[in-house]
Image 1 (cartoon, one colour):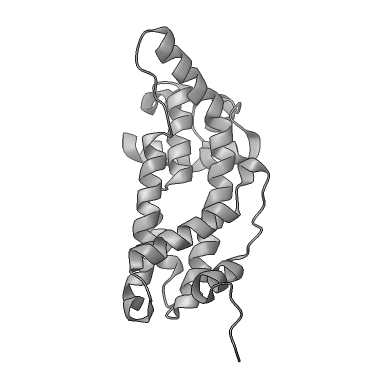
Image 2 (cartoon, rainbow, N blue to C red):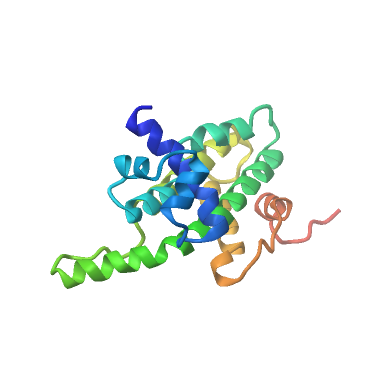
Length: 199
């Protein structure tokens, strides 16, 4: 198997394993779950930290994220239905990525302190892959609204920002918040607002 395919295969097994077991999962357990020899891991990853960071990147922003998003919306024509489907997908991804990021956080902190101790400039703020994930999500949501431009009172990218804000702001698992707003609640709030309409 080519190295890049092997990397993807290992990471695809690792993401749910980390979400379930945390960042202290051993490379032996990872190899067993992937059905490979433990040494195979280190032929494609230099160390465990890089392995965990690759899993975090995949959890936050999967390589086939756009294709999966498009597939989930195949055959859905109504804007409200599209919003409900998209919100459900984003909420599921948030739960998974939150669990994985909590698991890799000690490795991010260790890298920060190692860089500082060696005189290098430590990375501050979110990793690049987290920023890219937000850009990709915004682009996907803007694309969701684009075919409905004539139905909107605002531009598609503004609608996408409002939707993203509602989804990300209403569910912060790392702060102990569950999904307090359902996909249907968010679709109603986004498309109809909070004011009562006169019948």
